[in-house]
Image 1 (spheres, rainbow, N blue to C red):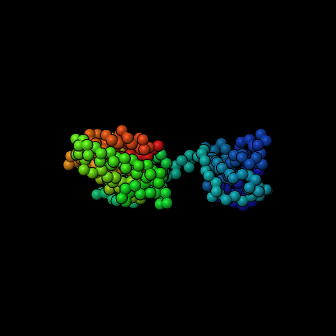
Image 2 (cartoon, rainbow, N blue to C red; image 1 turned 135 degrees about the vertical axis):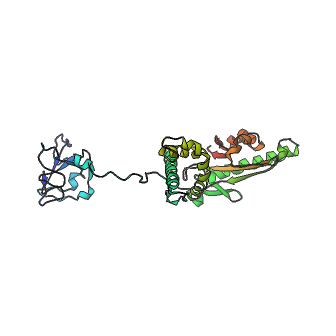
Image 3 (cartoon, one colour; image 1 turned 60 degrees about the vertical axis):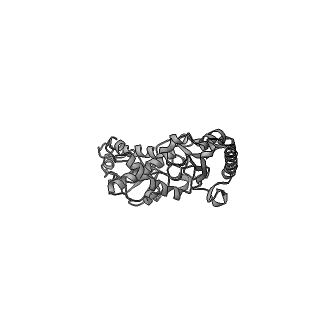
Length: 319
């Protein structure tokens, strides 16, 4: 047992003794992994010392290994390193609660960079949606900080991908354009309608993806007005935030969680019969009829690329 030689914040004397068995099966202070309790001998900040007193308070602390404390007849402890654990006293339970509305933990880029909305309420809701989107994405994959410049390669024009994905994409595009050229030469009715096929997006670092998520948010917010109003608690409730985060996640991954940020995805567009097919979810069904879509569904897998179910224009390199 160690007793302090002078008054401390918990009372005039502090006693240190183990509450659980140590390595030799005894509750001895020499056991480094023993759990120890710190008890006030005399009235202090934690209450009285009478065990029968209803307001008696005991504070439980996790101590560092006792071997490192050099416990003797008198010891001085730095209470700042101790962690307070239950049980808590009734008096401790009466402490003011932590203020609500504080930002909750999530893994991703700070939401402080989000652009403000028309009102403070809408802005707070936007931040809640962003945090919910990041938490949801973290259940499926880890946050990715980006691909080093030395591991990127150009695919088409200014667009880049991770080097191995870029090499596969180049082979895919070369065969695609060659096939289209041959089918046009043979007067294939479908192929002759195609006037362009181009990549419009490749690697995006988290910061750029954050900007895109931010810019797309208003459109998704407006699209879901009726659904949010029907949510429990109203259109800006936690339930509405979860709903909107899930809705956005179908079309735009949380920044740092997209395959574009890993450098393994590209978006492709085509113009066919005078119609420009782009990264527009409203065109998903129309995409299925295009020459490009049909060719990709039949051949992309040979190059290691797989479709994304919710976006007809998006392909991921997953050999």
